[in-house]
View 1 (cartoon, rainbow, N blue to C red):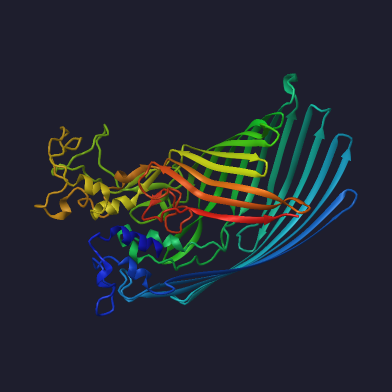
View 2 (view 1 turned 60 degrees about the vertical axis):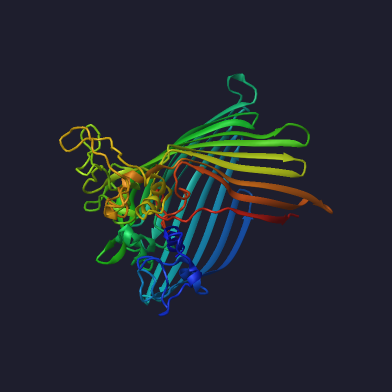
Length: 593
């Protein structure tokens, strides 16, 4: 509903005023168009949107140490209850008779873990044998009053993990470690249990290498196989947007849940990583890690015969590089110290294989602009309309003097950034501590559908600034291959409104024309903490003032590129009246004893 209010707030002409009341004589809303809503009308009713949640958590743990044996038993239970009330009054665009739905979700999550460890110390060698048994019994129940449908999901899974670890501490200049093990994954919702999930890892540390004092070098490597299933508490109802064109988004209402989580193969992943760590005096250093994760039989939602289902559809490979520079606990005086850290992260996720008949499936978005599951492409690349070009890349100009919109659609944008750099700064002076976290994202693209629709309705700054451009000649060639020489007026009041620069291509225009850079610099959080001595408790009382998302500079003109497309977890790269991000600020008080 908030997306709907935001969209109509931006589209409503400034000349429209609610001074003449929100309702007309028959009780319906008064709006500037029968194809739009009055934003204040959507908010008028008390408890228009009501969300409540209640959480109960219980945890119990017991541990016992013997000479060489340790035993840990933990039990936890969590009960989460969510209630959402959605109401649209009669005359709401898309729901002329109105709509009312009460959605209840009740999650009951039980976890039990029993682990035992046996260790043997022999001079400089340490041997560890660990056995861990984990049981998860989860149940989720969803009720929607609108369609009187009740969804019940239940899963009982078991993990058996055995691991052997070996550590060697040399004569002060060498350390090494090795671990190897295997896991079982058993579940009542999986088509096949997995009894072979090996893992192996090793590291080697060389102290004071090349006889350099306090210079240590560590190399590491690991290989792990995992088997998993999608969480049964996750809702896929927002996938319903893929059934609609963007112009019909007013008909969207997230009510249909997946039929079942059963009869699916596990999502299998094989990951290996390698890296190093170089430190000086333990407070200055650099560490780097390269990883590659091969994910097989990944699960995605699809609509078949009107039902929302989950299916094993594709394999993809996620690989990346992470580099960290750190400078910890550096004293610049008896009362002043600081820590600095910079992290560099780069990744790509490429689709290797898609099941027959499902290539180019939408994973989020609308029917006419969406993120795709396409073999050989980045997972979640954006597909939309584009301009027609010749073999040399020149625009084809039609007989009216405007670039020609091609038939069909293609990949037009990649949301994956070139890299992300995060910075963490910590300064401590006596009783005060200042923390600053900020990041820089370079590269990546976003489709700005908000800009496209505002252009279409003449409500954008661009359409206002450019409406008086006349005798403009687009660079390109005509159908005969000759340079275009036809001048056009972006807006001519003597022509039909559908012929102007921003309406001739339709509601979304040409999607390629609205792809923008997604670079940004963001100060994520700033906090100031003061710690006071209280009686016998040294620095026992802490008071923290904080501000989150304090500053954002971005290359694109739309909302924060980190904001979700509706409620979709994998909708990044699509901006269709995404809600603006917001700042949070506050104060925390803590007491430690």
